[in-house]
Structures are given as structure tokens and as C-alpha cells.
Image (cartoon, rainbow, N blue to C red; front, side, top):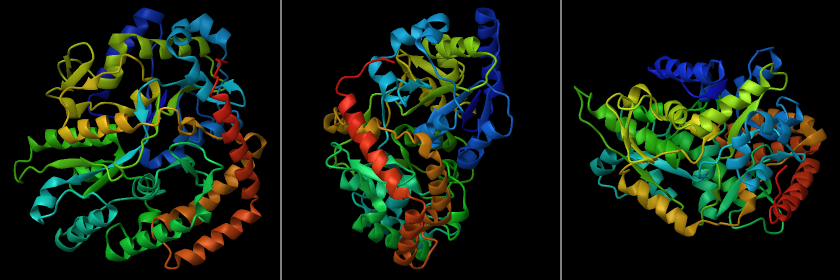
Length: 471
């Protein structure tokens, strides 16, 4: 199996325990390899094109799930396959989730059923706020002031380490404050979080988007982001945790994990003062689009020779309490400590096997545990989201299916890598000129046709989700 992430210090020890159980239960063992998130965009597709032999693989909207289906990378998951090998998945996964992951009316993944919101939050240095006499930022302008002070006064620290696509920054700093959600990252199509409205919004034709690009260019000029951000790979929370960056952007669970690791590290900061991290949400006045599950899951490679065993493994990792806890949290009373039947706290060796978020996004189920006594701001943000959640915003779960137009998607990916993503990371000194250039190239690549197809699919999807049916 391939999962995103980094191999933790105790990973092989945990995997040995997982395999001892799998061997006794189904006569099989599992190899797990990791793809660094910083290499995910480029390395993931090569798994399917270079002859790699594997069975299970993480899938998500971020990994262009629908396009990979169109490329025939994943095995179709049928009811008969599940009845024969993993009937518990049919019993425990609601009809609505199967409907949400359909591609061309077929299912190619086992969806996660963890509660999830793709809302992005900021993790900042509370000690630096105190040092410069700043209140907790409540707007992008106030956050920018914080970053400027860091750039001017903290030698060797880049205020915000960012790279690859800049999509997390786009979501947190631009889309969310406007009540928008990104529904297609290929053509940068967005919609109101509260619902589809008349049609999807193409950001490259949306006037405020140019203002955003010009702001990010100024950030690069001021040293708030790396001068070579457009050439860098995805930056994980490690840069923040290690003190190389004063800001991290991620979903709420990722931010909490980074915050907990900072607290763990503080025990060993022998020659420097411990420092605190704080989670903030700059879009508190906007509704939250919640997924009834993480927009991710696990798929079986088309061509796998172990389909039945693969489904049994998925079933056990989702529905067996011991295996689920091992994969997501590690060894009990070492990496984590149980608190009741559904909560956990960090163990003495937590940093040797920190909560495996990608495993949670792939195998999330009703067995997931909640952190006990999380920081006040985490609880406050989560409660506020629950109060303001848009329960019926089906557009938050929509993912376009390219069908016969996956060649256009490939063209868009190339355009994005060459023009759009560098623009979003301040690479070009004439944002308007390069945005116009991107639009012209998009017209040549027939992107307008793709946008119309996606818009039609979105309308149809929202209608269909009013009356979902399994398979």
C-alpha cells in the first residue's frame, strides 16, 4: 500500500504488530510505503506509469482522483466484490458516501467516513505575537503585519514557507473570507459555500483574484515568502515545528497535530526557551462547508492480483478496533493513551509515531478517536464551525469527472505548473500580464469546453444528491 506522509521513527515497530494480527486473521501481511507530501504532485502519477507492483493506494481530490479514474488507474468496486470480501463496508458506509465518490456512475474507492471540513486555518507563533505587542490577527492585513515584523526582526526565519501550488494560501487568504470553496483545482473553479448558485466561478476571470495575485507578489518582494517559492515543493508543518517559519496553513487536524508536536518538542529544548503555537481562523464570519467524510479514501490498483485480500485488509483497518488504533495512533501506552472509549492523549513517545492523518483520511470510520482536552482555540473554532456549518451544501462534495476530456485536464496541469501556480506564488513581476497570457493559453487548450462540462456536471450532481442511491 502507498500512503502520503513521512515514515516515523516507530513505524516499522507498529507495522510489525499490524502484520502479526493480519497474518493470524487472514493469512496475509501488508507492506506500507510512503510518498512525501512534498513530492506527491509529481510522484503519485508515476506509480501507475512505471510498472510499480502494488495493491492499495491513497486517493483524494488533491490527487486528482477523477482524472486517475478516467486514466483507468483504479479498479471498479462493485457490490458483488464487497459482498464476497468485505460485507461490513456495505453495512457501515452510508449510501450517500458511495454516491459522492461515484465517477461516471461507478465506484472506484472506499470512502473515508471521518467527519471533515476542508476549511484552512493558520498556525502562528504566539510568543512572537507577544514579543511584538500584537493581538491575535483577525484579518489578512493584521496577519500581514505580523509577517512583516518577523521578516524585519527574526534573522534566518522565512515568515511563511510555501511552495508547489500555493492552494492552501489561496483557500485560507482569498476564498474562505469571501465565502467561496474550491471545487475544481485544475481550472480553478469555485462556488459559494452555501450552494452552487447560478454557475461555478472561474477565478481567472474573477476580478478580485488579480488583486490577490498582486498582493502575493508584494509578499515575495517584502520577503514574507521565499523568493524561489514557485520552484519549491509542498512545505509541510515541519518547517513551522522546527522554527524555520512563523506560519503554517493546513486543515484543523493538521494544525492541531503540529501544535501538539511543538508542545512535545518543548520538553527537549534544552538550550532555547520553549515557544507556543496558536491556531487562528480568519474566516470566522463565513459559513463552513463540511464534508460528512474526508474527500479521500483508499483504492485498489487496476491490475492488482490480490483484490479479495485487499478488500479484507481495508475492512479490518476500518472496522477492527485494535488494527484501526494501531494504524492511526500507534502502540497504546507508548505513542498514545486511551481516554475512555473514543478519546486519546499523547503518550511519552508520541513524536515517534504522531497521529497518522493520511491514514485517517484513507481509513476514517466510526472508530476514530477525538483528542482529549485539545487547546481552547481548537475547540472554539470547531464548535463555531458546527454552529455555522452548511448542512446541505452538496457542492462541497462535488468532484468533476473528466471522462473523454482527460487530455484537456493534462493540458491544464501543464499550464498550471508553467503559469498559474508560479503566479500564485509571486514569481512574475507583471501579474496582470501573465494572467492574460494564461487566459490566452487556456483558450487554445479548449479549457472553456471543460469548464462548461464541469458546470453541467455540478448542476446535475447537486440535483442527484437530493435523492442519493447506493451503486
